[in-house]
Length: 326
Image (cartoon, rainbow, N blue to C red; front, top):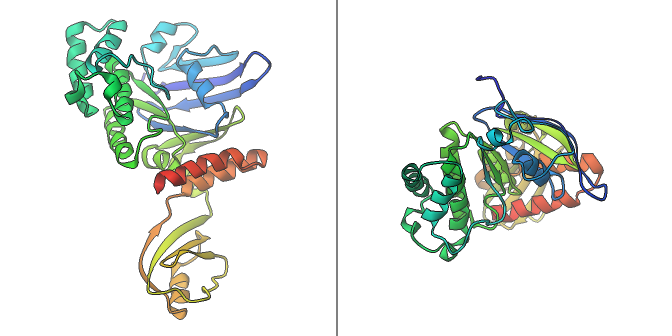
């Protein structure tokens, strides 16, 4: 059934004890083979939604289907389609990575010989094979996160759910993990990613959904949603000292980020030639320019602010993204 979504969530509600309503009629579809971002501020409902899909949290009402298999009708069959990488490390720190992977596959009925073969493949893809017989507690934080991805892939899931998989790792390790995830996705595995690093979502994902206060407030292809933004941002590296007064460019906002860098926000329809003409008239010599990688951050903040008029949650996520990009 090639047209069956990898994930279909329909009118999903979740109310916790005490009356806290975490999900308010969430509906979402993820296409087979997609790399899909699920974004939202802390407390928006992301973890609850993932918990319900992965059968760790009981829903109040609504339906969940994974590749056409209804969660209520066939819980076991649904779970066999899913690999989950949670935020927290949840393996035995005193076991070896090889044993962690092989034992996990055994829980799903994978014969030991096949599990050993898969473990070598997955630990190799995660660049952990040389650590296969080390005690897991001795691994670095980045290695432990890669181990959880390798473990999840041991059952050959058709849908891989990653809940902030790169949290707390440095930029070099994060980008290495991106390559691993892109390789997994290229083999046909559908991936759903939650992350506070918005640069990560923009770099990896083709589609996204943004959730806030238990409601999906925006969804669609990444390119289409970013195209809705009417502002573009650029950074200019300049030669020599900046003039005492920067040129005024009607309709644009130009500020000095530092003595050698200009930060420009301008309407998408504006001709860049106007900008360079203003620079030339002011005696500003541009050495290089680059696009600011904050388009998804801008969209995220606008949508969250539109939803409740408060930038607090969005500001937290946006500041984390800026820190990650530094």
